[in-house]
Length: 329
Image (cartoon, rainbow, N blue to C red; front, side):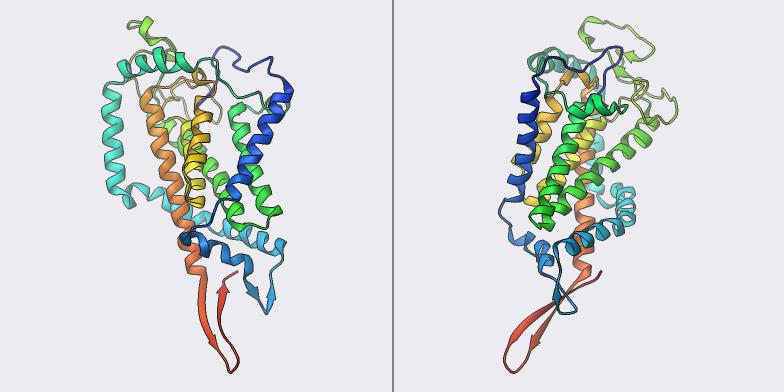
């Protein structure tokens, strides 16, 4: 979980104008995503904007209401699919687990290299302070979280204004991805693994051990119960923020058949205030893979439900030939 332990990591001195410019850029990205071309695979996803019920076209608000009801109805199947993910994606899960396990064995030198070179190179890069970070002061939410929330909210707002159900669905799935990422990492996996976080300067620590931080990548089993806030103890694996960033990126990537924008923004969020992560490299790798898995499960589950709800029936009469689409509400 990206956090500050023992010090205030919030940045001061960022001009408010720059923060407003960044907010504009985030909203502009939402608009850009909404305007990306629709592929053949996505064409059906947008046809429900023109669905006909009892002979009358749906209004903008009827369409958005349907999308919201659809999102509520899919929660049960999504949770079931997430629980079954290791069984339904056996091959991917096996290779991912083997890769993370191998990385854990070499985590000390790999994380030392990461701290000494990658973090050092990116040290000082940070997104502007978000206005809501200090105003709301919600425990555990840092600037990068608020910028992500702003982007998702902007995408949904664009979907409402443009009457674009694809944007609305992508935003709702992104919000769900964030929620499922939190529960999966903070409530379940971090509690189960109980892995201590590494010192921020591993190469200078030798074999030093502490109550919260460690130099031993195999220091698991430090359980302190379920914690919904970032207390730092036994909460290293997997990284919640990497899970969150890449689950949202994958959902948006699948929605728009575009990887550069969503994964690029996810990388920027991950690089911002990089020393605040305080993770082993394997924690971040596990979070990334888990996020991709959560995003894929959400996307596939909702696609399957949409396909089951739509039926098409040809209509032939004396003076016209047409196709009637029926959608279950």
